Image (cartoon, rainbow, N blue to C red):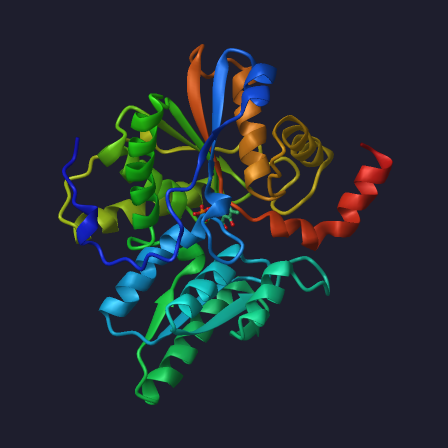
Length: 337
Ligand SMILES: Cc1ncc(COP(=O)(O)O)c(C=O)c1O
């Protein structure tokens, strides 16, 4: 095991932790031969909850350490991250501005943007994701000229600082699993901007060595995710003088469950959301978590997991995404399902 003292890392405790780990008895019975548990990071206790809150705790810690008074961050119009970063900044009294690029949802106001506006955050709109960085630098320079200290958080909070959130997550799970008397063999989560997976791979190495981390791609380019996981981990290791050896075989990003594409609501997605809601009374968001669950079910059906093993599934929040897709969802529910 690697010796690493997380308590020395600056952190703003904006979340209510630990989040619960719940057994999913009816899903486990449905799948046979495996025990599925869900880690409820949709219940992180700030804004609408979700995985980004954990990263934001450490990013805000770093921002304050550097004397920042303004947070600038980026995402698409539907971004969960931007809302969570903005809410975190509000909670500790920092100014925040966000840069949002268009998403293919027409004229609808996404729920995340609505809540961001309720926070009173200044929103800058650009057409494409490629324009976001330049816009953020422009805003930062505007603040610097006034004598303020801006701090830029990259997309998804996925960098060498943000990943502390999911390193800490594994410390939390190690304690919870000891208390519960359960050893988890697999951890399954939706993957996108790669920070959750990079943090999980490092976190398990430090706090939970024998677990397999499986990232289910929500619709990005797999090579990009894998490259980003490697580069974040390398920068993290350098920064913290850690001799971390991560083999390629430890970076498991599965592409097989993307379905029709990112943010496309297929029949399979709605059927799986319904299945889990009916079995466990838990709703999965239609962009990330449901794909991770389709992956879990698909792998179980292929006998990927050792018989009788304990699988920990991450609920990373984001249910508000349903509000972007009310019409297609209703249409499918009325017609097909
Ligand atoms: C609800 C939800 N789950 C999972 C993810 C994926 O996490 P990451 O971007 O750290 O890969 C995201 C990212 O946007 C998300 O919003």
